[in-house]
Every structure is written in C-alpha cells, then in structure tokens.
Image (cartoon, rainbow over all chains, first blue to last red; front, side, top):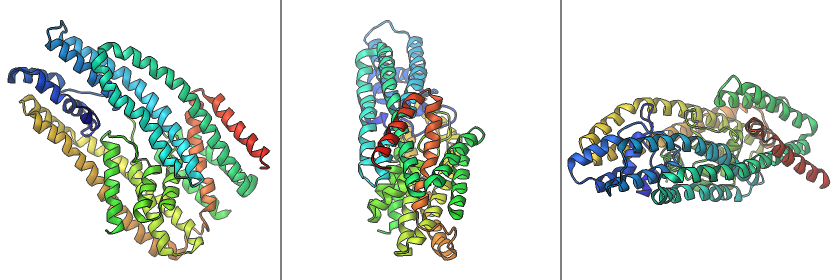
Amino acid sequence: MIWRLFFIQNSRNARTLDGLGFLHVLTPLLRELADSEEELDRLTRRYTKYFNANPILASYIAGVLTNLEIRKKAGGDIPAAHIERVKSTLSSVLTARGDDFFEIVLIPLALTIGCIFAMYNSYLGPIFFLFFYNFYHLRSRIGGYRAGVMGGEEIGRDLTTRLFRERKVLGGCAAFVSGVFAALVFTRAWSFGGPRLAGWGIVAIAALLGLRKRFSVFWTVLIVFLATALFVLIW
Amino acid sequence: MNPIIATSLLGGILAVDYRSSLRLMVSQPLCGGTLTGLILGAPLEGLLAGSLLQIIFLGNITVRGERVLALPVAGVAMAALYILCGREAGGDVSARGVILFWSLLFAIFTAGVGQVAYRVWENRSNVLVEKAFEFARRGRLRLASTIHLSMLLVHFIYGCAALLLVISLGRAFIVSVALRAGFPAAGSPGVFLILLPFLGVGSLVRLHLAKSQAFWFGAGFLLTVVLFLFNGG
C-alpha cells in the first residue's frame, strides 16, 4: 500500500481533487476487509468522494483510516460517520500543517542552501537539497503510514505538535539562511560593479515586492527579468 | 540518442515526479538542470542554468489551490537551450549573454504555459475521474485504479512534447535569429548572473517578512556582511 501513496495526486482534478487517488491507495485494504461483493460495494462507496490533503501527510490519514477500518471489522464500535469525521478533520488539519511545514519552510530552506552552493559552482547544492528534503519527506511518507496504523486517530495530535515544534526551529533557520543568501548576492554585486549594480538590485527587489501585490508570480518575474535585461543593455 | 529527444524524455520523467506527488523533488530546476547537463555532457553548465532559474523563483511558494508553474519542464528547457546553443556559438564569450537571456525567456514562458495547460487538464479530467468512480462503485476497482495510474502518462507525454517543441523551436530561434542579430548585446553572462539572483532575494524577503521572521533574516544578512568586510571586502 505504501508505494500507492507516492502516486496519490496522479488524477488530481478540479471537482474531487485527490479523491480517486485516495481510493487507489485504500483499494487493497477494501478488498481485504470485504467478505462479499455487497460489502466491498458498501465500503467503496464511502471512498468515492472528494479528498484533499497535503500529499505527504496523506500517509498519516491513510494509516489512521486503515487502523479504524480494521478495528471496525474486528467488531469495534466505530460507526461509519465517525470514520468520515476523522477523515475530514485530519485532512483539513494536516493539510494546513503540512503545507506550512513542507511548502513554506522546508522546501525554501533546502533550496536556498542548495542554491548558495550552486552559486559557487558546487555540485553539493543539488545533492544537499535532495538529501535534506527527502529525509523529512520519506520519514513522513513511510513512517507516517506506519504511525497512523499503529496509533489510530490519536496520532493526529502528536503529529501536529511535533510539526509545530520542528516548524519553529526550521522556520528560523530558513529566515537566517535567506538573510545569508541575500547578503551574498549583495556583496557579489558590490564587488563586481560597485554601488550601481547593488543599487539596481535594491530597485529590482522593490519592484518585485510592489508588482507581486498586483500580479501573479509569472508576470512579476517576467517584468522584472525584462527590466533587468534592459538595465544590462544600458550598463 | 539525439540530445533533444534524450532531454525531452528526462523532462517527461521529471514532470511525473512533480505532478504525481512522487515528489522526490529531483524535478526542481536545481536538480533537473544538473541532470540535463549530465545527459548533454556539460554538468557544470547545466547546474549554472538550472540554479539560475531556481534562484529566480526561489521564494515563490505554492500552497494548495494556487496555480503551480511548470518549473520542472522549464528547468530542463533552460539548461538544454543554454548548453546546446552555447555549443553552436563555439567559444564566443560575448554570445553567452545573448544565449542566457533567450534561454531564460523561453524557460519562463514554458513555465507559464505549463501552468495554464495543467489548469485546463485539472478541469477536463473530472469526466475521467467520474467514470473511474462509476467503475469503482460497480466493484471494478482494478479498472478505476488503471484509470488513475494511466494519468501518469498524460504528465509524461506533456513533459516530453512541451520540451521537444520548446527546445527545437528555441534552439532554431536563438541560433538563427538572436545570435546573428546579437540581440540583446548583453556581452558575457557575468552581469546577468550577478543581477538575476536579486529576484530570488525579493521573493525571499517577501516570504520571511510576512512570517515575522525578520530578526533571523536580518541576523543572517548582517553576519554575512560583517564577515565579508572582515575578509577585506
């Protein structure tokens, strides 16, 4: 089942988002739990719905639901509505936490360090990025499913606490490393072309911050890039 | 193997890594550019091209619901165009600035077009997903899974086709039009390489100031500047 978690977003679409992907993840479990065609049909209907979660932390949700379905099958008093509630609560909580941790903190941090190495033509850049990011990624993907199966719905609280703690530390690191990166870019520009180049850098940053309030990433980058090219022509 | 076909296949694989949620992040331009360089026999140039595109988009985070630029495909396009056109220009250093400018412009457009294409696909694939759900409800779970997995092919084919088109057209344009006209007369890529990272700094500033982490950002900045000054500037 774990390898299926790596393909959860294949069929992401505007209506049910990762609903089909999540059904694909749980298919072996549903087959195993169902004793008859009717039961398989009943179980399947519960999962042919909308599903939206951070793809990395979806492993925890799949693990927790596996735990609940197995306990229910073994005779536990777990109504289907409770399983549905756990699924939707965990999805929303873990999506917010997961996006915040992976997309806002971890990836920019790992990429900034990787890019600092790459700026000095070092292959350590991509290698560091891949190891650093995938340490957290694979730990959450593979370990997350196991933790969910073992711990059941209680795991959600522990996980969000842990992510909150790690986010605090790594968030500070990400800001610090970004500051180092900004200083390196400034000092390089200063050494290469003096205050004129560094001055243009400040203009580019101000333009980017201003344009982003009104335009998308694509148009902002395109406009500042073309303006920089124009500056290089004049310079 | 033809270098354009080889890099297109790589782009297809990286598109799968990014869109399928395999998410090993080999698809980030920093890694994709280096891999393209390895395939084309110029890993250092690939690293340079890929990392430049990565730096430009460094602090632009994409949380769920936001539009996602097709950076993996753009990273391969950037590195492939920079390396292949550089070979055509021979040892002419002054042409490198022109090549860098056009390679980046093609890469940025590739990223933008990929974003639109993916949005269209997300809206259109509803029909297929509904069909798969119908099969699942009738007990045909294997067929539903097959439909789900077959969508990997869509991402792969898109990555390959987009790169075949962009690299072929981009290379022809840069070599036959831009290099001949010498436009823009940017000289060596040195100044570009110094200035473009400011775009990344801008988006990182935006990211960290918004998150009330200005103290740590300032600390990193000041410490590096002080070390720079102590080392004689």
